[in-house]
Length: 497
Image (cartoon, helix red, strand yellow):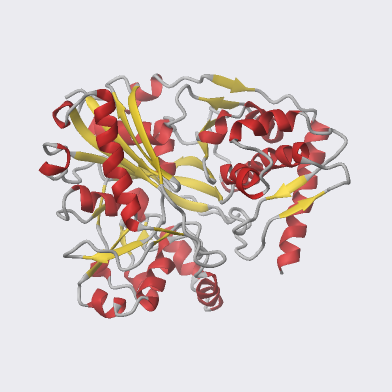
């Protein structure tokens, strides 16, 4: 048994990847699934899609590689975080579609709780802000809006889980109701210092605690797959939310190390070590990973729209047919025009946390066209990342010797976007040979748990960059560009207020 199966369940697709003991990819299987938008600002998934694409891609990748379950030592899972599911404890039938992390339907509920002064309690215990982004108010909404849900939950008939919990439940045939510390830390219900669910917050939101899964380390025993699923049982030994898994996959194990993932959204995590750092700049304090019962903490900044801005160019404006077309378009943009796009399609994330504002474009001229829109879209990711890094520096100045930003995710393949990122943050940007770092992190967790992959120190020593981007922009231009971005954001927020 020399292979690890990593399940990477994301916002728009599910991937299953087989890794060997050198953490090289043997085979990959991927399936997309539908997004559902029942109302403005609402985003849902069909719960069954999350499971069926997982089962199908697991079988698909095994078939591609020509292997059987007996060749696989363990499964590691990484997943879209905060997405909220509730299902029947006995039958496994969901009571509603999954409410996706991007969903903003609980904005008014959150405003009310803030007005009562409850956000301080939330931040003190969970490290998070009181925002619709997190699972807690989504779960409360389900209990309050699905007929009979609250009564059934209080009777012990319903269970809650993030996507990892939903997958473990189905993989094990309903035998295990579990999560890991990183996913628990994103629910807005988990006390990250005490390492337990917060009764105070659950009581305030009206959430019966018997709905909640048991929390374990990231590398731990999460049961085994039911025998009929893949031919024989496979142990499940690793779980981490996607951004924490990417932090692990990028070997950011030392305090001061920093990674940023560019997928649908953008997520930057700064390892702060053994102690949680309270942010004064509306960043999140979270758990980077937990091993042997010991949590390692991080500061996190979340951007809602990164790669999704390219999808908007393709599906909304229809000025590109695929993501690869954006770079040559951006390179042809008119240098005399300074078009700035603030992609607040579902509000602004860190460090602004404004759920009400919406996207805006500034600096348009009669000559502005697809080239300028493409450049503005790619540059918006760099500008937003600098916002995060400025806030992180203000919150935690201890730093470390490694000042480079390690990047991953689909959008990091764009040399144009990553060079602009390096230019605007004025720091080196390092891209690894394999961009599937979330899956790599999940595979490493499972592989170390069963003893077939190297320990943390050896794994970190083997990390290398495929390409390093160095800043190459004059300071006066950098300062002027970022100042223009800040004015655009201020105007966007002002328009919504």
